[in-house]
Image (cartoon, rainbow over all chains, first blue to last red; front, side, top):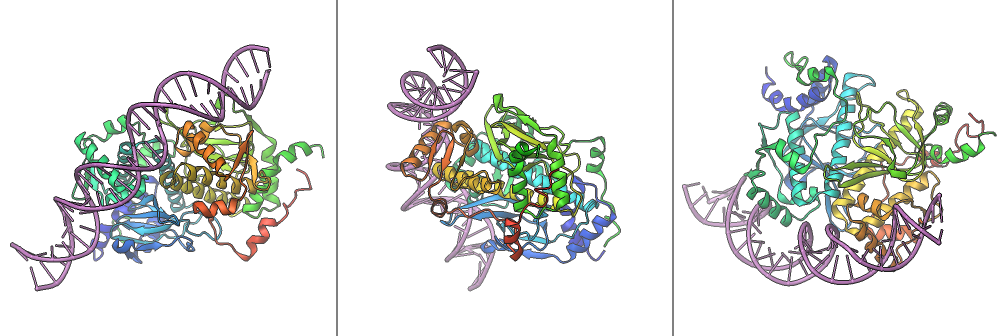
Length: 258
Length: 258
DNA sequence: CGGAAATTTGAGATTGTTCAAATATGGTGG
DNA sequence: CCACCATATTTGAACAATCTCAAATTTCCG
């Protein structure tokens, strides 16, 4: 049990993959092995895990902390495309000679590793496919958010999506989670000024839609809030009878160690 | 040459794939065969090719005309996620039991077919992978557009992207192309009202950034315009020496018929 | 020619931005 | 434990962008 501290830390990442797909021994083993070569990045000066245009040798697998995919316009405007949360992957594209279409920067202290290669048809491949599909769905949600919602709706919608995603990796506690982002980062994500983020947050607090203090967010009634702003959970595959099972199935080989 | 009319019509779709990847005889043959079972949809009442939540049995392959991926909010607000142009595909996700995350509606008269299945590692598979990567890049571009650009920049940026994409299928003539969309559709794409689209277009016309009349758009100086709004072409893979070749390579089997 | 759909125009109401300054917060070294 | 600093949050007031709601016009199509 010499790895217990490390493993406890990485569990969320594995947990997410096990929840969105069915992992087998081979997949878990490959992931475990990849996770031994862990890398670190800190949010100090928004350290980059990857720079736009870089060659992507292998996908990145987030183990803990938050990162963000960002695009900078020539005049300095910045847009955050999406957050990368524990258990999520970046660079799953299968095109020849892939290059990063955006930079990846650390938002909090981050640990990650290079994702193991998946052979076509393997369980790991299926997990990657599902992760990629979810990623596209999150991106589509971002477009709707930016295109058709007002400031307060954007905030709520994003917070609800993050709750959904953080729950997958067990990084949410009930209806709350740690939110390691400044209001400026929220603004760059939601296409608004940090000043306006601030005022909108205050308005939401007054309306008791959320509680946000000392880096922790609480959504008192997520379902009711989702209903109010007309949000439906992200779904990329038809739920099957077996799906329920796979979502609660134990991780194979979680006790055997690497 | 009995299919000549049909083939002339379909050529743009094949051309695009041949330009973004290297097609071999097998790929072209499979595509040709799939294209025999052509389907039609008209823009009348925004006819749906696919409805949100539908099971996606096979990807759709656009042969001619424009379609759009749309999301409707419960209160009726509508957001267009992206256009589908000739040669582009929808539903390439490889997750189990895929379901459509949005509806696909015809914007003009559209012909399309079900895309042939590609075996892992085949040339067709590589073409699909590249198409999917481009799709993701377009989506990311949409997020930046909506999040960090003003009305006029959004219009220009979208028009430049469409020029880039239509050129791939040979559906642009020099610096102009047919733009079969109403100002309302532009608004739903760019997150603004049709009224504001109208005013912004007028402003752009006065500034001579573009010409737009009777469904045809002309961008007098695309490169200069791109520079002005700080737009860089979409790129998802590192250009290699062979890339230039593949972009101008003749379509294999284009003369042999089906 | 007629009618539906699309574009254009006007004017006031909202929403979100800008810029600048004040206040709070968290981490650090003494 | 406290003082101090950099960073983040909060506030104010003027300004700009965009929306809303009609009501013309124009265009397209049969």
